[in-house]
Amino acid sequence: MHSMGVLTDWGFPSDLEDVSGEVTIAGVGEADHTKASGRTAKQIGAQAIERALADAGLTPRDVDGIMYTPFDGQQFGADDYREHFGTTHDMWVSTAGGGMVWAGSAPYEAALAIRTGKAHTIVNVFSVAWATQRADMVGGPGEVHAAELFKQNLEVPFGWFPQPVYFATIARRHMHDYGTTPAQLGAIAVACRRHANLTPAAVLHDKPLTLEQYLASPAICDPFRKEDCCLISDGGGAYIMTSVERARDLRPPVIEVAGVGVGNSKTRVYWSQQADFTATPQVFAGPGAFRMAGIVPADVDVLACYDPFTIVSLMQIEDMGFCKKGEGGPFVEGTALHFDGGGLPYNTHGGMLSHAYVLGIAHVVEVVRQLQGQAAAQVKDAEIGVHPEARVRFRSEFPLPDTDWPPTREFWAAAARGELAVPRCDACRRYVWYPDGMCRFCGSPFSTWTVVSGRGRLFSWSVVRRAFIPQLAADVPYVAGLVAIEEDPAVRIVTRIVDCDPTLLRVDMPVRVVFRPLLFRGVQGEVTAPMFVPV
Image (cartoon, rainbow, N blue to C red; front, side, top):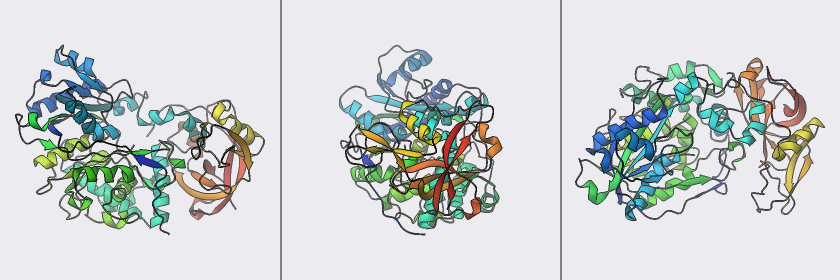
């Protein structure tokens, strides 16, 4: 175990204007959160807006702005709003809303729109029908990542997919660096489940969980159990924003938005290459939000974190300053996160782990209800709430990597020759990985594929015990991991660790490359791939 300093060259905060106190949340609504329901995302979004309007005491014509996320073509937009509610009025439209990071940052965009007269009352809405889609094998959250070409060609082939496998690898590294334990991750899962048990609308309302049950649950991708992973559900939410002045005429109590912060990662969804592997963009977002609001973390009464996995919750708690980096494990132990536990009340509706997987929109709804004094697991005298955002079977088949795709063609050609090759910048001589055509250090577009030694150290790994990728079912359990190459440890190759007893693997142990055929069951063809063995 060793402690590492927080690196900050992998991301940055957005430069935001001060909008503190300019916008309020006047009404919130949740659609029914369920398992596969047969509903469409648009039907779910409509239900959420209906309930938000009723909560605010507004009519459909009172809303002249709508915000949503256009990522899947199924979100509820202005035309859907007018058709559903039978109106014809003009509406200001923004696609900088909806769920994910925008569930938390939408009030900033709304404040600017209200300030400039583009709209006076704005609804932010997000909904998913992922449980229904997964049942029909036509979609789900993994499809978003499966569409990324670098993932298709450099991650999926080695079984480092989907999201549970990435974050299990991150969790293992956090455990190594800081001594975090399974029981500490379990404390997060148990707190969320208890809150869901108190919340009638939660998908797992009737499914209790104790720490003993958590620890007895089998691993699906070490060190994760299924309880470490978010639900897949149908559901959605909406909230209505307006100016402080207009809110005075609406049904009380309305909730003032005191601060907003946005953090960005330069590595996007390629976590394998993030310089600070155990950090989230809250490193950049949190300080800005607190500064705008004029508060510090100790002032917060209730926290609603985007929680796709327990380790993400723990890292965000650290990164926002509720405790020092590396001290998240002890911070969350026992009942510290329970609404009545005397610590930091956390995801008091159950979060995505136990309430519903609707990408953060329900977290905002819960914070508002807590501050209104109307939550199911109500925190006594809650006045300041925070919601941060950080930006399983998914399909029936995956192809072998496209060895002719230009950005990675030389990687696979070198592997066929029995060599490991990585592009090296012609200008600054740094290795560039992933090979997306631009050096992230100096910006040069020129690089040369260079054969490296094939030696490195095992940065982190997960023993995958569930066939998330159907074609790899015969390989389960297998070890998918990251190897930091000898020439530049900042370059981490996604790979398989083979010819070893997984129980003997250790972080930073030396490994060397071997070349093996990559076979996907039921897929014609064979590709030679670089894999690694312990030295």
